[in-house]
Every structure is written in structure tokens, then in C-alpha cells.
Image 1 (cartoon, rainbow, N blue to C red):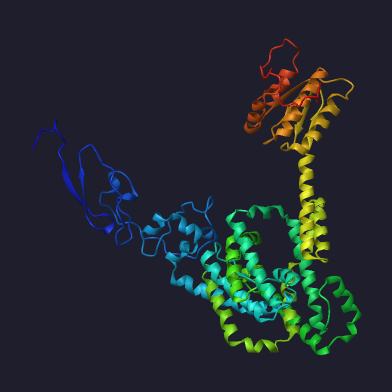
Image 2 (cartoon, rainbow, N blue to C red):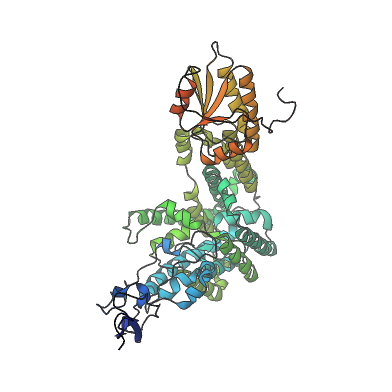
Length: 586
């Protein structure tokens, strides 16, 4: 054996990481080599790759058994933030360890969300998903028949549109509670364009699905952010009234009533004497029974945890591409356009669903209804279907939103009322008008930001938000009206930009003009509390006479001092600005 001074004595040690195969490592005294990554053993324990150093590879107590799987929480089903191809955390599998496929193709799970929960699916989840899927299916069948009536189509087309979304969302869905299918509002929109022709409704499903897919791939979902809450509330409330009143003719047994809302009101009031007693009694009895069931439900104890309304609404904002796939594939089975359903989603959540696999049971229930019950659809009274529709859409009318907006912000009543009233003429016109009114109000707040002015020896002007080109004139008027129209001119003007996070080129040009105009009257303009993006833009513009301070106190102390007094020296640009167009200021 060689002397210790020439080389370290080496020894061999056998290790058994996690119950797996043996690995032979050479360890030297005073030196620990970083162990290489080992595969997980049969017991599911991870090898030396789970840690670093000697303590990670020496024998020790057996690792703790993995936590038994529980119901998936909505957070676990959401798509990962960032790009669609970003690597998501590895999903544990029932046998322990991790699947190598997830490490080799991390983007697959981002595009196929079923791989996030399917590898660890358990028998306990199957029982809960089956109960929830059956509950939703029993609710979906009568609603589908009723919504087909709203769309002006034969009843079976409501069932055609009810099963494909369940199957597609099982594989592509990101929230366990959401169910896709026909809804009252979507059926109302379909009735405006299908003209009672099933072929037009099927084509509408295909085209709308293609548009949704294109919007999903182009990441255009941000456009929905411009639809404000008052617009949505006005639209849903008007749709509730329109759909409910559209079913009054079926409750009363009247025929030949037009579909336009104002004509419906006129014709129903004119022909109220032609009411069929049998239809009216049946319809009112069904309405009373459904209302009684709703009251009983409200008094029953809730066995399942019901999440807040805001959380359920956020889950309904599903992938645009998911709904697009469902509509495109649904068009091949004679379905009309579908979307997320609030009512069936609430039933799904209250039934204790664990994963989107509950949609498979719902789809199977709808298919069984199509296979064995279609011959009985002919005998379903329209008055009963009308009662189902009315009981489903009445809760969409939010009476308290008007009182709430009057108390919180009365200006938001404008888009709400515009949308609500115009939706009685045409639904699409009401939505467009509401969005336009909301956009005008948004642009007005950008063009006229709040400007705080403090007078004294130094005039302090503080904009309340970022400055963009429509707001430059407002800022200029605020500065000039207080600085130049006063009886005694201030020594200088300080522009406090602590709330300004961005400016554009037009604002830079306007500030250059303002600097020259104040200089003509013997006043100086200084900037303070500039944020980094704004400061970078102004420094790049190299404005003539540009001065800025770190804080408002420093600016007031420096600009309020007499000439020759001590003070902090601001950054000053003496070069002539090239931003001003020739001829604007001489």
C-alpha cells in the first residue's frame, strides 16, 4: 500500500438506497463526492438524488410513506402560469416516485391537463365523481330539452349539445367543478341567428369553435377584461327577463307569438283571453313545485363544502381553446354552441366532485337518454319545459346590483342601464353598447386624471395617475391656470410624479413645451419622485432645462431657497431639446 502522503486510503461501501438495487461508491477520508442521481426503488423512495452530501447516501430510517391521496383542490388543476410549454411540477403517481415521461416532456401536461390528476386517481375519488356526475346528468337532461326550446330547435338538439362538452372537458379541463353544455343565455343568442333551422345552429357551433380556438392560440383572452361587471350584470339581468317572458306564451298555451321582446309583450297582453286553462294550470303547478324544491334546498344542511361565488365564477372562465374544441367536435354530432354552465357547476361542486372525470358519467347519462328516451320527448308538455326554464333563469336577475352601484359608484349605472335596456331590443346590440360606454368612461378617466395642486411660494402639482397623450392638455391647463393666472407668481413649479408609472412621446413633447412656456414667464419647472421607467424616458429625451429630485421634500427645500442659498444640486440638462416641432414655441 502506498504511503498516506502520496494518496488517500480508499474504502468501498455498499449502499442500498430506498430498497432498490445496490450502488458502489468510493469514499475518501475528508472528501465526499456528490452522489449521482439514482432511480427510485420499488417502494417508491427516492435514491441519493433526493439530497446532497454524505447524509443523503448513508443508511438511515425508512422514508415516510407518501400522503394518501385526497380530493383534488381547484388550485391543483389550474394551468401553470407562464407559457403553455413551461415545465410544471412533477405529478406523484400511486406507486411512488415520478414518471419519467413528465420529465422528458414537461409541456405535455400543460397541453393535456388530464395527466395532472389521472396518474394518482384513486377508488375513493371514483365514488365521489360517480355521484356528482350522476347528479349533474339528472339535472342536465331536462335543462337540455328546455334550452333547445329557447334556441328554437327540436328538443333532441339540446341533448346533442350536452355530452360532447363533458367528454372534452374531462381531458382538457383545468377546474374540477366546471361543466360545459347548453345554457339559457347561449340558447338565446343562438335563436337570434339560427332562425329555427338546426343546420344553421350546427354551422354556428363549428364557426364559433374555430374562432375560440384561434383566440386561444393567439392569447386574446385579455379582450374579455374590457367587459366590465356592470355590463355583465345588465346583460344577464336583461337575458333573464327576456327568456322568462319568452316562456309565458307556453305557460298560457298561446300560439303564433313573435320572438321580439316588445312584440311579445304586446301580443300576450292583447291575446290574454285566449289562454288555455289546462296549460296554465300545469305550468303554474310546475312552477310552484320547483319553487318549493328551491325553498327546501335552502333549508337543508350542506354536506359538501360550497366555495364562495367568486371562486366558482373564476373557475367558469375556462380555457378558450377548451370550449373551442368542444364546439368544433360537437358540431359533428349535431350540437349547437355551448359554454360553461353556472347552475350545473354549482350542482357539481355541492355533490363533492373530485376531478373532471365526473363529466364522463354526465355524458354517459345524456347518451343513455338519447338511446332510450327520445321516443318519449314528444309527450313532454311545453308548459312543463317552460316552468323549468323560468325557474332556471329567474335567479340570474340581480335586483340588488342597482342599489349597490347607486351606493358604491353611481357612474357605473350608466353602462349597466344602457346594456340592460338595449338587450331588450337585441342582445348583441346591448352588449356592444355597454362595452362602448364602459370604454368611453375608461378613456375619460385616462384623459382627465385627478390633479392635486398645492399653492404657496412653490407651486406643487401632483397627477393622480399615469400620463398618456389625452391627459397632457389637462395637466397643462392645471399648471398654467395656477402658476400664470395667480396674483403673485410662485418662485417655481414642482411636478410630483410619485403616482406616474408611464408616459408616452406626446406627453414628453407637451412637457418640453410647458418647460419653455414657464421659462418665458421667469418660472422653472422641476420634477421629483420620478419612477425608473419615467425617469429613463425623460433622460433619453434630453429636455432643455430638465431638473429632477429624489423626493418632494428635497425639491421644496431646494426650489424654495433664495438664489445663492445652499441646497441639494438637482440633475440639470442644458442641451436644447430636439423634441419640439419647429414653429410651435418661438
